Amino acid sequence: MWIRRRTLGLAVTSKSISAIEIDNGDGRPRAVCGGRFTFPEGLDMGQPVSLGKALKSFLRREGFAAARCVIGLEGKRLMARKRVLPPSSGEATADILKLMVERESTSGAEELLWDYAGPSESPGRGRQAVLFAAVREQVNRAVEMAAAAGLEVLAVTSSTAALASEVARSKNSQCIALDPTSGGLDVAVLSDDGLPTVLRLSSAMPLGDDQDAQRKFLEDLTAELGRLVAMLPQDDVSGQQVELIIPADAGLSEAEIEGLAARLSLAVGSSALPDSLDGGEVFTSRDWGTYGAAACLALAGLPDGKVAIDFVHSRLTETRKPMLGRQMLWAGGAVAAMLMVALALLLAWRSNVSEAQAIEESLAGMSGDLAQAEQIVEKTSLARGWYSDQPRFLECMKELTLAFPAEGRIWTTSLAIEEDMRVVFSGKAINETAVLEVLDHLRDNSRFADVKPLYLRESSASRRDVAFAMSCRFEAGS
Image 1 (cartoon, helix red, strand yellow):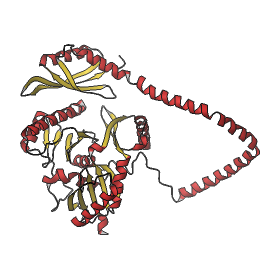
Image 2 (cartoon, rainbow, N blue to C red; image 1 turned 90 degrees about the vertical axis):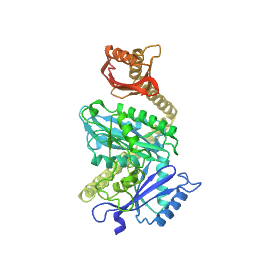
Image 3 (cartoon, one colour; image 1 turned 30 degrees about the vertical axis):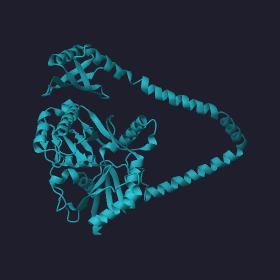
Image 4 (spheres, rainbow, N blue to C red; image 1 turned 180 degrees about the vertical axis):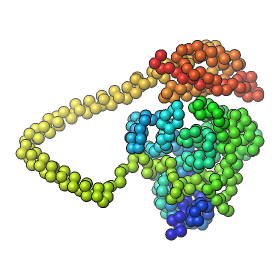
C-alpha cells in the first residue's frame, strides 16, 4: 500500500528524462528518489518500447519504487494559444473551445491532441482560457515508453505548465518563469489571471566558457523577454512589477540575472523549493532547474494534486460517466419505451417497403451530386475565412505602414495584433526623433486609440541606434 502513496514525475526532453519520486505518506510531500536518465546511444522517442525497457532498468538501478507517473513534455513539442471566451459556464465552456479547435484545425485535426487551462475572468478582458496542443504521435510514444517501463500513466502534460502552476501557488504577482531543458529554454508567462502561456525561446544556451557566445546569448535573451513583457496587457503591468523567475542552475550567474532584470525593469524572484515540498537528500533549491519540473509533475499526480493540462484525459474529448442507481432504472425504462416505439416503426416500415426501396434508389442516384455539393460548401467555408475576417488586420497593417517614413529611418522587428485589435510592436530607429514622429502620426490618426510608448532606450552600448516598443488599439469599424 505504501507504494500507492508515491508518484513519479518524468520531465521528458529530446535527449534525457529528469525523474523525481515523491512520497506523501506523512502528509507533507517528500522527495525520496531522483536522477537523470540520459538516452542510450542510438535510442530516442522514435523507439518508445526499447527506450522504455532501458528506462525500466535505470529506475530499478537507482531505487525508484513508484508504479504511477505523470509525464511532462518540453515546450518545443507543444503549442499554446490564449483565447477570449464569451460569457458561459460549465459544460458550455468546453463546447465553445471545441468549436475553436475545429476552426483552427481545418486539416490534420486527427494528428493533434488538445486540452485547455482555465477559464479565468479578469476585469477589462473578460473570460479567457489557454488552448494547448500536442502531436498525438508524440503523446502515444510517451505512453508506450511508460508502459514498457512498467509504469501506469496518470497524465501527459506540459513540464513548464506544471512548473508554472506550482509557482502560481506561491506568487501573487505576474511572473516570467524560465525552465532550462536540453538545448534551450522554455518559458511560462503568468499574468494576474493565473493562466500560463508556455513557449520555447529561440535563444540557445552556449556551451563552454566562450564569453562572446555568452554575451550574445544574454543579448538575445533580453530581446526575447522584452517582447514578452511588452505584450503583457497594459492594465496588468501598471501598479505592480513583473517578477523574473530563473533557477540557480540555469547557467547564469547572479550578476547576469540581476543585470538582465535591471535592463527589463523586472524584479528577480526566488526559485527556491515550495514550502509544501521537502527535497530531502535528493535535491535542493540549487538543483531546481534540473529537477524542478519533474518534482512539480510528481506533486500534480498526488491524490490532492491537480494536473491543469492532460492530453490523455482531455476535457475536450472526455465522455460522460454512465448514470447509476435510480437514474439507471429511469434510463432502462426509457430504453424499453424506445424499443417499443422502434418495433412499431419497424412494422410500419415493413408495410411500405416498396416505397422505401424507391427512395433509396433515388438517393443513390443523387450521391454524385451530393458529394460535389459538399466539396463546394467546404471550399466556400475555407475561402470565407480568408476573405471575411482578414481584411480588418490588413487595414490595421496598412495604417501602421503609412505612419512610418519612407526613407527607412525607423523599422519594426516584431508585430503582434490580437483578436481585439490591440497592437504591440517593437523595433529600432537611427535616433529618438524618428520614433517620436511615428508616435505623433499614430496619435493623429483617428483609427488608432490608446497609443502608448512602452519603452525607448539605446539598442546597445556599441551602437547608436535606439530600440523602442509601442502599443495601441485599432478601430476596425472607423
